[in-house]
Image (cartoon, rainbow, N blue to C red; front, top):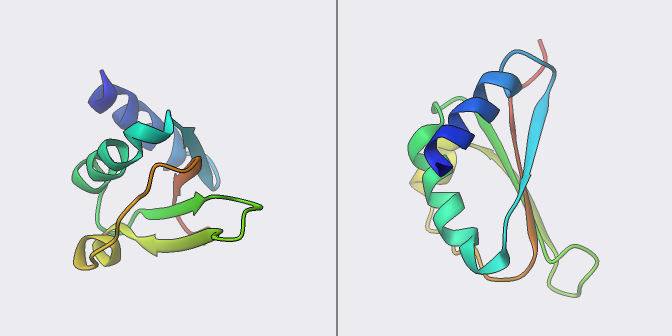
Length: 88
């Protein structure tokens, strides 16, 4: 089910400028993040915005290829995931 949802969001995100957003239950952030890394093309952009308005706020955008090369822990704080592409 999650795989199909990601596939549909990618279809929309790559055809409409410039992004689609996902919000999931915080304890499922890691699984969603790993599925996005698995399902998305290397050039797809992924923004992870976690703990927004909190002292530990983190907002980072990288290509899937860059995310795959990093060691990054997605915590269990509320997060928004944005997938898309750069406008040309």
